[in-house]
Image (cartoon, rainbow, N blue to C red; front, side, top):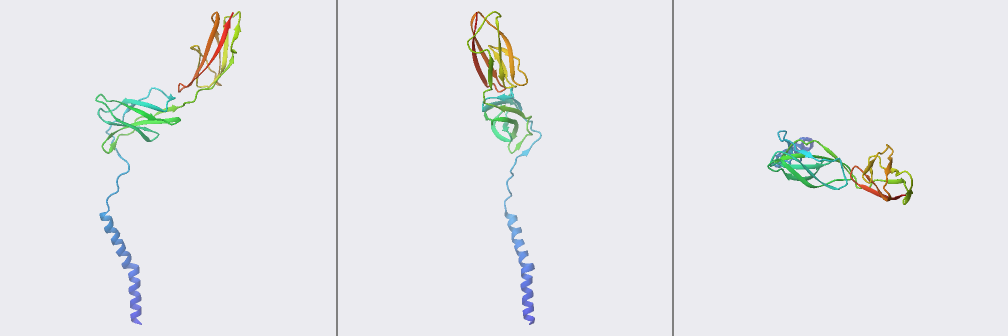
Length: 217
């Protein structure tokens, strides 16, 4: 009977204390020889000056642009679009740089840059937002109708509607656009045939043109 009690106690002790301790010991030894995990992100070096980007427009109709600017001479320059790296180059001896073929997505794109050195990067530069739009603007001409004949007053009224943020020109004479996109102006005519080219241009320089033929007698 005593033998059975002692045997049961030894089995209980082995399962409860000895075996877990042995397993933990193996895990500890394995961790000693396990190589360290590689760093996922690069460290930030505040002494590195971020680049200064030069993008002289706020909207474009091109899906790819070039980004110019200045940075510390002979340093790596990284360009990011919406947190994703989109291009890389090295600044010249005078600090200037240009990164071509930066791809944009339709809508607003947040562009910034960093300078790099081995496994370190600078803080990000100032973010520049560029709006990419490749749709032509709406343009409607209310008057004049095509082939209109005018007598007496040597002017014709040109009116219509476009996008509120666009600009409208009638043969290079700019019209004033109302908040709802409507516009109107009196255009001076020459003797005989007049070809009026009404052009609407949005912020991204997309253009829509409509022509009207007006004859002054």
